[in-house]
Length: 151
Image 1 (cartoon, rainbow, N blue to C red):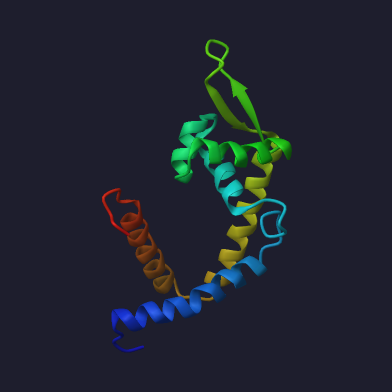
Image 2: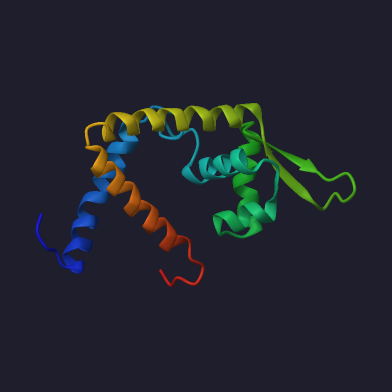
């Protein structure tokens, strides 16, 4: 592939990304892609898996939504037994969210299936191509994580 303008690159990315996302999703056979849990719900469960018990405000900040919006998402996760609300015995206004065994197991299962799929797909690429791809993704992540970024 020769030189490509930024505009042509953007057009090509717009063209191929929906198909890549669809094909990755099609290859996953878990609750996330069966419609039993939404992507925002899974992102919250994954965050809780890494962070443990967290306050509602921390979840809202992580998802970049209001605490009111987060309450609705958490309500559904509580209803489906993926998380529980934990009240601070000293101050009942402080509510923390904690994953249940069912929630932790779901995250573990989805991540394991995703890992296996990545191995199957990226095993077809050379080690150099995989390293280049990862290097670029890490650069993109760094750009996206910069708070002062206007993206």
